[in-house]
Amino acid sequence: MSSEKVVIRPIIYKNPFIKTPQEVVELFGFSTSIRKQIKFIATLHGQEVKVSDRSLDNLSGKGISEKKAVEALTPLFTQLDRLNLNLDDLIPTGSMVDDIKLLWDILIKQILAEFQSIEQAPRFLEPLIDFIERRCIEFEPQRTFAASHRGIDEPKMLTLIPNFYRPVIKKTALSSEQQNLVISGLDKLALGESIETNQDELEAMGFFTQDFNLSLFAALDLVAINWKHLHQEGTKQHNSFLVKILASEGKCYFGKLISFIKTELNISFKDLAQCVPIRQESTETGRTVLEVQVERLKEWRKGKTKPSFATLEKFCSKFAFEDQLLLLIYCLICQAIDRQLVKYKDDEQRILKEIYSADNYLTYYLREKETAA
Image (cartoon, rainbow, N blue to C red; front, top):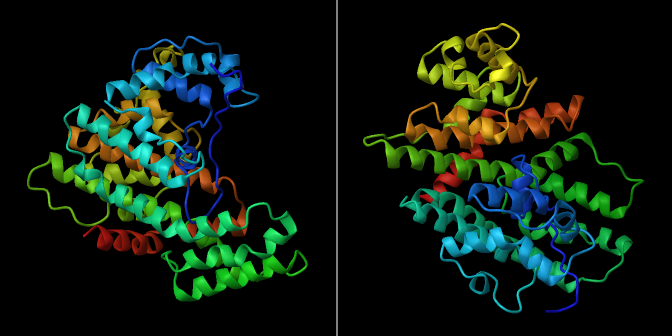
């Protein structure tokens, strides 16, 4: 084997128009650490990780030997074998490691193979796949522009920012006025730090930075509706569930989701609390299980505590089968929005709440729904 070190790092673009799979993983609160990802895959399929945590960390840092890397990636290779996927087919010879379309193709093939392996029809995923494939195509002018300007120093690159984004601005769901304001703000940014953007330009830029997220959430919204249709015969749900969630009352977006569930099921918060999973030690203070569940649900609604993915899975499993994946999707979306919110304060947070309002989101949902149709 080669004596060269093998290094695997997350691919991060920081491009408001398109995200890499790793950036989407991060958006939904999952770690992009190679160590945690390998261990997650291993745990999921009951496998053993045969290398140390230190070696796994070095895999995304200074690198490890090829032999050690093969050992570290054994859970991934085993998963691909189980899904009848060949690594050489997924990553053709000569592929670029940062080819965003290739990265998404690999993930989509894995997801489709996973559902087919449990005999689930993957057609309900089409809105999500169509959105990702469309974004990759629309991103192509940016990719070409970046490739033709490799090696340019940072000051010069700053002046090219408006030209880099012009080809994709019209592909967003922003209004014509917002698109013009974004370009105006980018033009000022290219001229230097001494020229400040105005409030309207800042707000438009805020909408632009969230355009991918909103479009992604709309695609997932349609996936959830398709899932409902697939598993509940006679269901003719065509309106967005997420619009209703965003319009619900709540101190945080996850709190809005809890209020939505309560309203849809026509039950009390106390009844809903019985779906909240708790650990045995939570009742050691003398409180009853229900008292702990009620308190935990209050914390979720106020945003004081955020349930882990494992806890969310257990919570969603308490509902009807046709609602479990649907609810898990909305749990992840609402938590993702809440994580965006805590990054900002005051005026910026106000803008973000406007961006993630039911009225603004509806534009994205109708756009994706029309495209899917």
